Length: 240
Image (tube, rainbow, N blue to C red; front, top):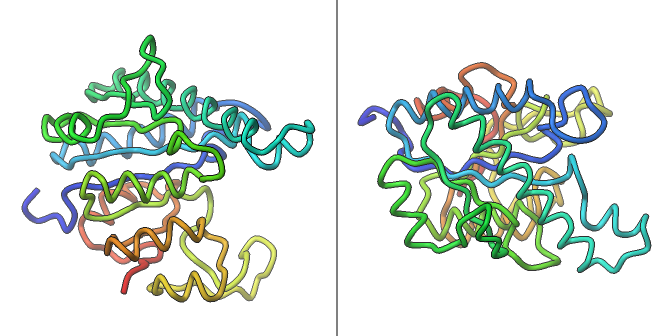
């Protein structure tokens, strides 16, 4: 572990990453892939916290508009979706021998611990993976922002943003524009000023304020997390 660049990480996984080949819900294949990548880092003794989105089940702003709900109600429904994803991840992590806990920003003591900062840090020190669910617990904030907030609170060395099929940050959407240019390194201000849609701008500003580097990478790449920990040049690094 002494050779690794980062020893405490916050991994942000989008809900859409859990879709796999499905149009809705949770696909076992991407969940197993994510779990296996987490385990490789876990076995190295790295402290790992995870924030998972809920877009595979319910997207707050998008779905609330379709259903005629106010945004706050839709966002709360989205938060509940993240809890479902967190429980699925926890179950699979335990199957492969990874000790973990789910902490929820919305109290639901039957299925998850309440989010308590110092308890989360203590779990990490005991080599337990901590999955943070229910976003920040407040509407109008994305799970990207929740990830940046939790990264700052636990003192993470880096925030890893796992993307599905996109290997970093581009000047434009690479799935639409074949001439889009990939950045190996980029600054926080470049993302904010140019409005690059790789993450919520509030989360980017939070990471800048707390000097937390962000690595955007494709989680489909085998050993991706380990390669980042070993300081290999994959994805896009955001800092400075």
